[in-house]
Length: 341
Image (cartoon, rainbow, N blue to C red; front, side, top):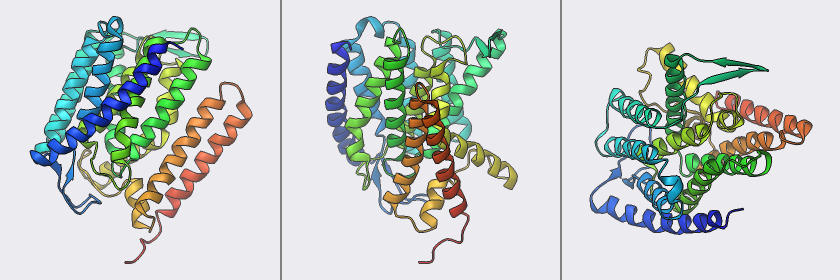
């Protein structure tokens, strides 16, 4: 492994830890806080905009240690900065769903138009289907929007979105390094720097958290996962595109059902509520930490399934089945009457 990757990882963890404490101080100093509302589980104002620490630590180390790579990703830097700005404004004064969506789509258009991050083909078995330009843009836009919002929706408990992303990144990194030849170096760099920034942040975000990701962080995580899945990819069947769907199956499914539920009940699609899986787990009596660990366990099983699928298909099926069984059990359990008291 390139020695810079190890140095970059350690340096990013350190920078992220320092930046997290700085952002936490500034949050209280300037009242960048998340105040309790009906669908929140905290009862006092909490420091937010933790995504600023992730963004700064990631790009600072990237620019210092990987100058030759950074020169090719200036559009991603600008796009992710726009995502952070959108999230920060939303954390501070609440954007409308339309305004938030516009920010995500604008950042996506900026990145795609200035880079090669575009789904140009879809592989169906041995057949390669070339998409028309308008469909390339539509498929890529939907991909960015889906992953970005999935991370935003799952960010409801201390350490949940951060933990799910760490598991996802670790799995992707291991597959990129061990099972893809030649190793996709640009993807590996992004994965390692994202992991470093998250591991520097997670001790402060784990239950009981002293700072939240905020939309600043959850939107950034989803957006950057979209980027790493498409770096150097021209076919939507490539393993790095499939991996995020596989590993993030639970939050993606929860997101889809949220949209269906809101359409069915006549709610606005982007209107927040307390009916996500993590909220329902709390309602049936699980503690905050138990709910987080239950969902992380499912993500871990999906990740192990993706990892073992590279060499041990039978074991992969077992992990996948266990993940489905556990997810089904939690969904069925949360349909029971909420625990009193």
